[in-house]
Length: 200
Image (cartoon, rainbow, N blue to C red; front, side, top):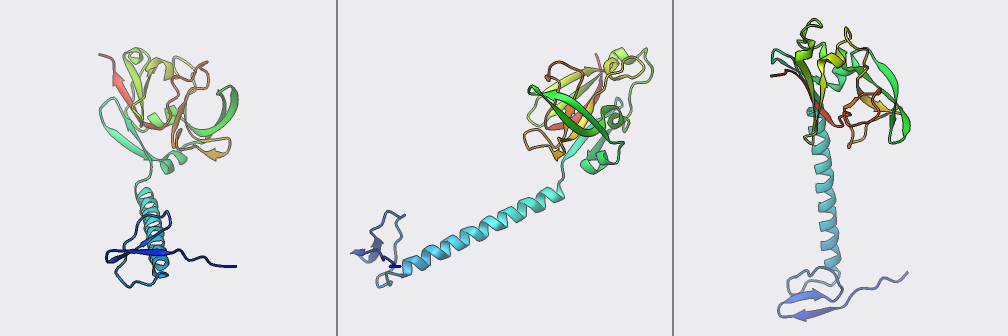
């Protein structure tokens, strides 16, 4: 195997490569082969920086896991992680998504809301609602009467898995799912907050 070494033309006091690579200026007298060592060193440096950035990103993600904010009617906030949700009674359910049925795993929304102060009694339920917020600013609203088991048997879930795998970045890590609805307009992807509010 022959190794072709590019020709170099001297211009002024520098040595310039005649190949269509980014122009690299070397001091007068630099051996022609030296440019290959320069490029290799630069490549190695960039690779090391890339690995360092990846390691820092992974460390930051480990130190700052995804969280779900839950706010009660008294204004007090509880912050839950995926581990906190995993400690709740697990649920498995099917729901149509994009024209096909998917099997989800997660927890009941009511079990998540049990971590905070909720409206009590069916007489006052009509005056409250749940605001679900996504990372990208999307919002969906549920009347508390819809979620109150004393009034309706509506199943709503916070899903963490789909078809046996974790949710992808565009959907998770938390997905609010309302399986009984014909449209997915109130499915909240990248769910970040659940807030119980009084209608005013």
